[in-house]
Length: 140
Ligand code: HEC
Image 1 (cartoon, rainbow, N blue to C red):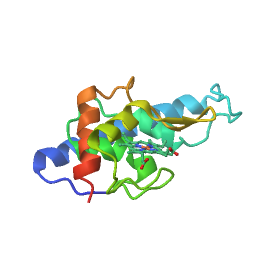
Image 2 (image 1 turned 135 degrees about the vertical axis):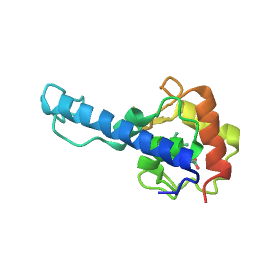
Image 3 (image 1 turned 30 degrees about the vertical axis):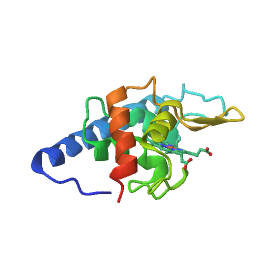
């Protein structure tokens, strides 16, 4: 994971991490009830998919692009953008606007969601712009 500079930013990322842990454990408790059943036929007690991790993360009101990227995109594209289940996007040839468009609309192929659409998520338009700009100019 990238190191975030500055005391305040460090604290913000720790807070974000705590929030993430709280959300994930809340969900883990919910799932262990066994009541949740997904369309795919999987039942409770499983670990979160990258989609779910990302959708839980979101980090409301966060304005640090590195933190936003790590939690929302990192599960699939890697914290440094070099790719995991999603392709490498570090050094992408897409424009900032195209990246923003991709983040807003995601990708669905043959009815399978490959990348979630973030436009109706907790992320604000401003946060999505911060992320798009970070993908283009901040990934090292
Ligand atoms: C659940 C996994 C997942 C998450 C979370 C995710 N992506 Fe993706 N992303 C993908 C996959 C898979 C593709 C490839 C889709 C395809 O086959 O066209 C993709 C494609 C992209 C592309 C286009 C790459 C190209 O060269 O065409 C960009 C840019 C991108 N993602 C950025 C992001 C950003 C920024 C975030 C965070 C806001 C994010 N993604 C979150 C899985 C994910």
